[in-house]
Image (cartoon, rainbow, N blue to C red; front, side, top):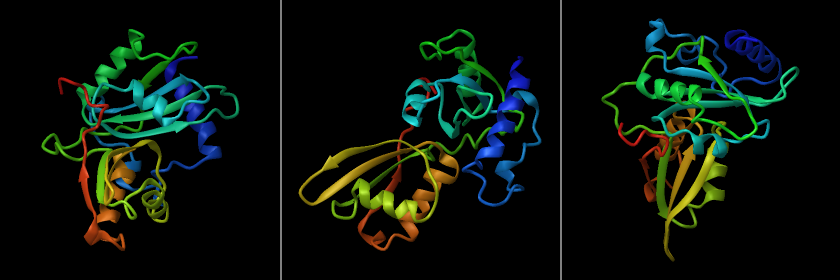
Length: 220
């Protein structure tokens, strides 16, 4: 089965079983519609053949090709016994590095044959002048406010998100700094950044900042 046909069939199976977490109730939202760009500007890829039990931590640990805009893992369903993933990179160069790594089998999971194709729902490169926005944020404040349980509870009340991991960067008797690594910048870290700064009941006591995406290519 060729990659395009595989993408078509696996996406059809997934669409019958689960909505995209980026959907937000509007199929015409510009982020859910293919961009009017040339094929060689597309920054979105579709990956098949992943471990059926793959999680966001497992996926992100293997992505060291450039800053991530969005990821979404499709669990096995119907005909498919392996997982698939949509990955949107910040720029075309990062996406091309990833595609090259798949071809050379540098992006690999033992026991699985990974394939990748350019996603038919095209995504344009992000603003190259934006060097701070990221799928990763840091939150600092009093430890009774800034802790994993409390912050996640607040965020879950406002929107859906996927997590790679949450790290405790600093902790004292009075304060804590968390680094939250989301699966996506779109709709996830950007929402967290906004809601924590604008709607958290203790927003005057906490600081929120963008943090470095470890998926970024070292020479980027």
